[in-house]
Length: 228
Image 1: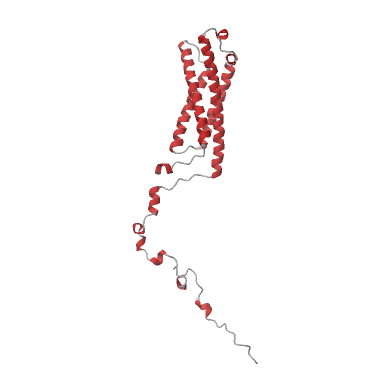
Image 2: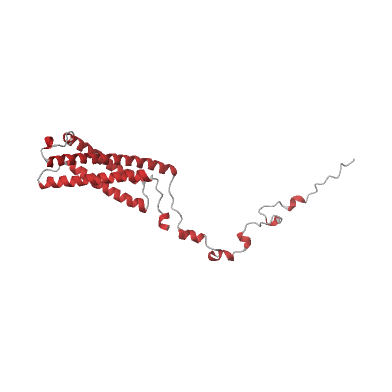
């Protein structure tokens, strides 16, 4: 119970936060799997590896690493929106470049129908469908990362407008103030020093403030006018 009290309250809305992260995770895993498949076959056949494939593999793996790290921070000590803005901003740049290169590099493939008249056999049709799946999930990774970055900016502005978070008081430290008087040694202190004034309203000497009695020693009575 004490560990949960020390976790910073999250400013992220639950459903959009986890929905966008799930979209980022799924798109990254699919893109990484397709890239491993393509790069393995290209390496096996001694072909040169395209920079587009290398970039997409790198950004997908970095996205998975960033999501794993931030979810641990989110559960253990609270996710800092400033850190998440920096991470998603850097990933957004990489996703943007990778998606633009893929769209330009595979534009001819994406514009054709995956059939035997265009790809000759079943292997060609499979490659065509894999390219289209790669394009779709790369687009999903780009859009979800862009949306996550916008959510981070919104949450960061909202968090800074509400002020700074202070840790809650430790339970052990709080119990020290709630301890009985005999534990803290207050039972040995005289009652006069514990209370600055007496609760008895009739005793004016024990009040916090009283009018000096010397002010009432003057003769203020009226005895009539003196006749010369």
